[in-house]
Image 1 (cartoon, rainbow, N blue to C red):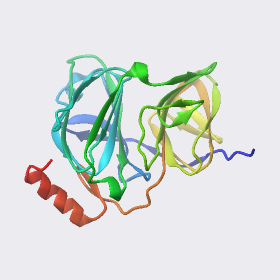
Image 2 (cartoon, helix red, strand yellow):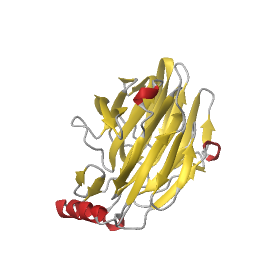
Image 3 (cartoon, rainbow, N blue to C red):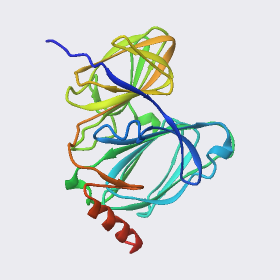
Length: 277
């Protein structure tokens, strides 16, 4: 059976940003250079061993209309929301929140020194699901499948690979999300859903995809195809793979709200002010 390897359509570098109470971030997706890759709306990387860059955290803030996936690599972050959910994320843990019709949420570091590193990804919801009830799921690191090859490991956050299923499952966008670690000169061709749109982000080292080198701090938007070929450089690589089924719907967004029309954004602000979240 023939396969179609994916290739790179464009490369962008993350841009410095601040969010919450002044937390310094690297915004990879959700910038003027790369506003979105349907169905994904934003990817932030936080990575600092300077507590002044993260200790103020992300105090209470509202969300409506999408899902957030927070993946910690180092440090500890406590989450709370207005439905009474609460959890403490540590290294390797994932938190998946469907904000849907509305939540007020906070994310606060529970350390005052040391490295704080991880990602937050925003995944859009279809119009038919934006006003569903919110949902929340904490995923401990030791419950996330890691498929190990000789010189490559694939940590599977969402989707299917080698008979394993990731713990994150969104019914319409069906995301495939994996953190792939490659040793020096290692290579792998990962089978992926052919019609899913997406990108990779290299958070350590460098990889080659179809003769295009993607370096640390760069995101590469991908063509469609049912295989993702990755070849590591001399220093190995760590690569976040992010793919999902496009929604093909209009996007209206303002700050923490992502809907389909401007009128729905106005309604979100009105509902928040009225205490309906």
